[in-house]
Image (cartoon, rainbow, N blue to C red; front, side, top):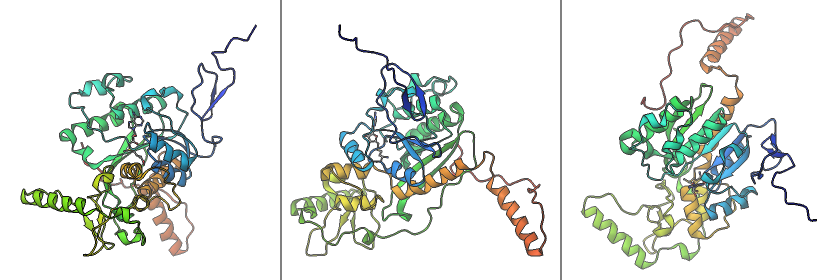
Length: 394
Ligand SMILES: C[S@@+](CC[C@H](N)C(=O)[O-])C[C@H]1O[C@@H](n2cnc3c(N)ncnc32)[C@H](O)[C@@H]1O
């Protein structure tokens, strides 16, 4: 008699170090053996892996990734040797491997939370069911609620703060702080100090238990477009006469109506506007001047990769249209790299570490060293001034 098909897996499943026997083994696998020494992160709404590149650079290990876009998954697989899991709603939260940091540049889809009452999103520990309604922030909240990791890093458009008169952001902030118990820091960061592109995004970093954290400094002047422009670009990137005329007429029409719409014509000594996911349509937000005798051109996908801070060996294996969409949706890698380093450093410090106390202790040491005296360092007794919060109080 043929053997009956087994429904229960007999082999322990290695899930980010969590070993167990379960029915219908999920296909989630850790890339390589989970390391005991590394912090582990999950890469949600991973796109082409901007977060992954940065957090791996900071010494952390990716144990799970998810994105439902077929072409982004192809790019991700080509660069990281692993195809992300699909729709986040199809993932059982409990099957996500154990991790330390949740990373997610969640989609900036229109938020329709206006009708969501605070009572629904707060108070009840498992109350996310009520307000899920497909909103992806609540998928993130559900994963945080279940796994209770010590940290998260979220990214979104700057407009998130103002959406629905601030109500959307308040619900997000309250959910992360009051409902989930994280100490949250947030800041709007412009990428133009690390790449030649003005791109403002909001970052929310959370810790549980709370820890002292400061966002890295992004105030220095950054590079200009010349640093990413290729000298030899195929003719297909030059705008046709028809499209160039259309864009000029469109801009004139809107200028006459007092609107700011129009194309962004730039040279190597400028900084580009924000690259959008719709750049493939007409390229209007960033047009590279080719002098008075030639129509301007679009950036090539490789130039877009550089504009987003991806390394030169990042593999682009999809069509130009898909590549433009992917880079336009992406995070700026060097921005995340700095944040990742700060988050990893913060998590590696003892809980309760306070930079102000250490500074004070160092001052004392220096003073005494200057006098040639060896002393036992004691912490400052005077009360420490409260630090200014990075974001506005809500
Ligand atoms: C703003 S992009 C994030 C890009 C990413 N941070 C990067 O660096 O490339 C949002 C991503 O969420 C993905 N997405 C949207 N809805 C999803 C869902 N239900 N499940 C999984 N991924 C989803 C989209 O395909 C898109 O790639």
